[in-house]
Structures are given as structure tokens and as C-alpha cells.
Length: 231
Ligand code: SF4
Image (cartoon, rainbow, N blue to C red):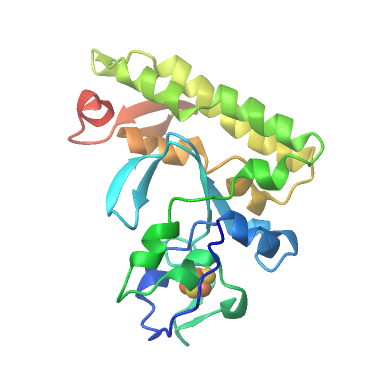
């Protein structure tokens, strides 16, 4: 299906760009391939990770990964959005979702939102050695496994499967470090290659990674019920 969208006149209020960068679709691949959207400006939200559906307004675990443009440090505002000028730094080459969005009539964006999303496999499966590393990381660090382990609940106030969960978090951190050190990969690429660090996203299960006396433990966030969150 050809999802090429006709640009709508934009009032430049910036509301959509402030809410976060777009997810990329197959139509956007040339923008990444030729570097108009550098891979270091992207991040992956992996299968099983909680994500907000900006069209439905719901928060739910993803059934398939999506690749998005990063936000400015510490906020969701699209990296290419300039508040001072209310302008888009890649306006002439903005991705499909940005071209399809008309905030006065959302039918076109709703029509394309969940279709032909770009994946890491589309972009990286041809990179020697890297794709195998991503597959290995997915196998060892899946959100489905983490959810199952967290879902086993607590005993005497501690997660029953704390050690296994910490091993997964350790594997995730180790792979990232090795990829930068041995693969000489720019560390700004890591959130695209492996998704965001599990030590950060584990909070979606209502738990935090805590360092105590040089060792790491997991602590439920205040007022959190593990059973409520996971099931
Ligand atoms: S790419 Fe441009 S138009 Fe799209 S969200 Fe970012 S700043 Fe806005």
C-alpha cells in the first residue's frame, strides 16, 4: 500500500512535536539509509515494552517493536524540534507520521499509524555480526521473561526471582559495554541497537535498581503491587 501522505498546512503550534518524535515506517527507510535521520538519533521500543499509543491514548505492552526519533535529553520533545523557532530541523525530510498528521483531522494518521513499521531487522540485518548480537540480546533480555519473573511476586518483601532478574539486567549492561569497547560503536547508537537500558525501563514493572554497598538490589517502587502491575 502506498502510504505517501500529502502534507497538510501546519499551524506550527509544536504540540505534536512536544509530545514526542514519530515512529518510523518502511517509507522512512531512505531517510535513515542516507543519514538524513542519523541512527544515533533513534531509539527502539522493544516487543513487550510498555508504550503509549498516541492515537488511542492508551499505555500497553508492544506486540512488535517500533523505532522512534529520540527526545531532547530528559524530555519527550522530538530531538529535531526547536522550541525557539517552533521549527522542525528536518522539515523537508520529516517522516511519514509527521507528514500525515493533521491535528484537525486525524483520520490519515490513524490509517497509517500501525502499518508497515520499520524494524531493526529492516535496517541492521545486513550488518555483519551485529544482527546476531541483537538476536542474542533479545533471547537473553526479553520483556516477556522479565514480566514472568517479576510476576512470581515477593517473599518477605523481596522479589522471589531477584537474582535471575539482576542477571538479565547485568547481561544487558555487559552487552552494551562490549559493543562500545570492542565493536567501537558510538554509544549514542545503543538505544537504537538494543533498546533503552533495562536498568532504566525495569521501572515499568514497578521496581527500581538500587545500589547498596557496591551491590545491586531491586526495590519495589512505593505504593506498588507487583501483581496489580503485571496481571
Ligand atoms: S521530525 Fe519534525 S515534525 Fe516530526 S515530530 Fe520531530 S520536529 Fe516535529
